Image (tube, rainbow, N blue to C red):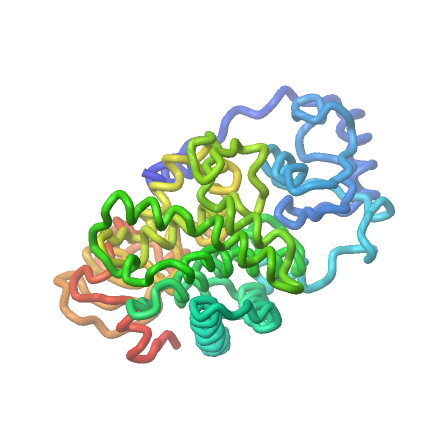
Length: 430
């Protein structure tokens, strides 16, 4: 299990350090680094020039000292090997001399506003976007066109909210819209994709484009018989028909004026697998666009963790376990890890059981991925508890003095707790 991996990794003793470098070498390296700015790798952006790593160059995979960051793959290569780098802003290729203050802020948890303060704004943006998507799917069914302006406006609101606090949007992905599943699913995939883009360090414009691709990835389904999506069992012919939605979506988006050019490709290829066993074209990893790889992950995760006819609904952690098990096979390995890093080991809105038997819902993440904030719902004997927020990064033992942490995650509906109903009753988290 993914949870076991992270707990084991955290509890392992630190490996013995590398052979000490000479004092002159250390001093020389330090003098060079003092001339540049040290940043965490999650703030690395296309256009930056990396002068120094936090490991010796000869121990990295890079052939030359100095990295001109030109692609997202360059960023992933650095993030895989380092925690911090030193950037030379005199070589910064972007228009500004340094990353804009907003982008710099949203990668730091200290700069984020609390989820309690963001939730209502996120809900308003979500409600408006859901209506927009409902209208667009209806327009396409009737032979109309995509209102690109409304799509971009809706996605922009989601990006702004996620930049302020992604946990509020994660809460909203737990809403269940059984009467309008496709529209809700599209919004969920967009939010999860934008959060992944945030984890990757994409610019605001890049996240905006990614969000447009994600929210439109299933638009082809609007041209299929809608009764297919409410059936618990499908015939082989019906399954084959549903598998035509990528081509239908590609055609719709290619003909949409002012649509982001990459959206049609994501609609066409979001069911491709990095091992070449996906559809419709059986593309291998190097031929699948970055945004399509991201949407393949977020689409699968939301499909597994949302209630829909004929499927078993998994808990968020079970969904993450599934993705983690197929990293490097069906899904891009680095992007799976970035997705998990973005939404957390225990995503907001997850139902969890504590080591002492108490049950709650994850409110938001903390710097420690294994110790989020939790809203207590049930006590140790599963009776209703006085709802309160517990910060597991601060509270390490229970009232009996025993270690206090999350024991396991639970599926929605466990012990009568339905996250959707909890939210609709009025999310009281303050």
